[in-house]
Structures are given as structure tokens and as C-alpha cells.
Length: 43
Image (cartoon, rainbow, N blue to C red; front, side):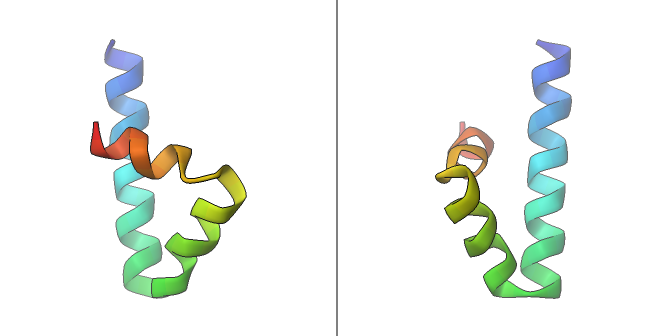
């Protein structure tokens, strides 16, 4: 579980950085991964 928590933390951090740098960066990431990372971060 620790690895998953770290993964989620990295995803959230990356999404926040992408959102801060470029709002569309998060959208592009979701398109590439089908939104999997985004939904995982919400769990």
C-alpha cells in the first residue's frame, strides 16, 4: 500500500505542477492515459 500511496502522491504532485504550468497539460495527460491517473488520484 505504501507504494500505491507514493504513486498517488506523485500523480497528484505532477497534476498540480502541470495545472500550474499549463492548464491543458493535465488534459493532455488524461487523454494519453485515458484519465486513469486522474481517477486514481481521486480515490
